[in-house]
Image (tube, rainbow, N blue to C red; front, side, top):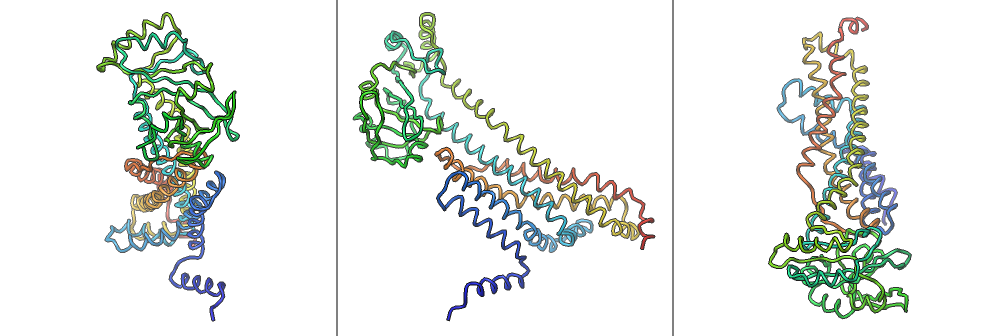
Length: 457
């Protein structure tokens, strides 16, 4: 005979309660695991990812008091000086008030870690991707390139005949509707160095032979949203008739969340014969980039072109990236300010509640500096504990943001990298926020006259 599930659940809860594990802490653990399940395992869109992320953060916050108790037991065994020993004792005594403040600071710090790790991982991935992709020495485009302008037909031939140009790649592109999306189709004549710049996510042994035969390269976001894989077939709308192509490989691409398709220039011109070249990628002979730049610049007076070195493209792209994510720094600062206010409010409420206790300590011989040190020490312990538990929570949040939110929203993947300096900064910020929040409560408690409070008893 098997006991019913409710009996088993009740028995497990009673056993956990006997071991000193609060039920709300167990519920928080369930919420945390449920959040990971919703975000990383169960199918769904971006909304499901954010629901899972919210559940993870809420569960982690609910587990904060239990974590404080565990850390309190560890610290209580350490040989600490008197004031610090009293501060460790008070963490457990006043858990009802301090737990909320530590949870607020933990959520703010973990959000800062999560967003910081995500941005750093994405920045490193984009920088590596661009460094591999920009293999050419110079890039030539029309002055109105942002509006899709094309190069004059004559300049392509003249640049090709320049003695300082050893090789060049040509790119023609247009936007087409595909499965409810606007996808950029690029007809490319790719030299060997340009081909090496593609970060292919599959076997590269026969990819370029298939590409030369008419197969296409599909960007990772488009492949994710359409469920494509190497060897799959794809139908492209053209002015003449639908073009059925085979997917030769998937390549990593952070240029567009809508997707890009690369096809050989010869195949492209059969279906879009009127399309002129949009961009040229030039490779200098014997590495003499300056001489090639001078010769190409002489053509700028005759043709309206823009000449950009690869290094300038990389530098400007990363500057745009940094400007785009600058708002995240502001949001992280706002979250820390809110957490700081929460810690300050908790300390002020605790000061009112423990006013008589501080008066007794003063009567027993503690100086004003020792009372202020006790309050400051308790606050610094709060900040230290909040930072220590916020770091693993923030890493989990970053994992969800990269593996679930980014994947489902944009369709791309990126390496997960954690910067130790960011974690150290989080630890210092937690201590700083708690330390600054303790200044006024510590000063006010130390300046109070204990006699009136003792007379009340």
